[in-house]
Image (cartoon, rainbow, N blue to C red):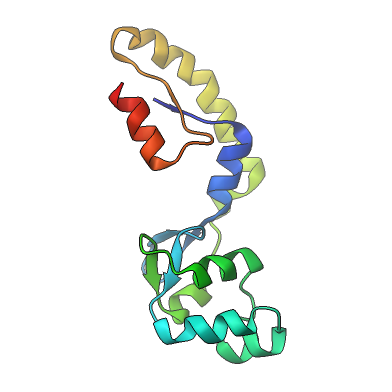
Amino acid sequence: MFDQTEAASIYNLGNRRVDPVSGAEYNLSLVRLQDRHLIKPLSEAQDDPDKLTMLGFKNVTPAVLQTLILNHPDANRLNSDILARLKKSQEDVPQIVKARYSNWKGASGLLEDLFVDRLQVVNVTDSSVTDTFNQIAK
């Protein structure tokens, strides 16, 4: 069972976006541009709102711009049309995440009791995927 803090849960779900056309979910911390030729102009325009607007990135936050510029090889490739239409899900607003987290914490004790002989609790708040897998493998 994965365990994380309420703050980590709010942060992680705060980065989730949904494409209303396809229904696909994306993590804004792990996206990159399908249009590779835009990476250099985007990097050069990141501090210029007018240039960002011309490139079609008017409403992209600085954090997402940095993620796009990094062009991480493990990130999902998105074209600028998909990126522009991504929406935050209503269920990911902090008040709802807090309520779900509270319910989860209340129920997790019951799950721990039921599966005590075969349950491993892994704290994933500040863990990378590799660290998480290493904890599970112990």
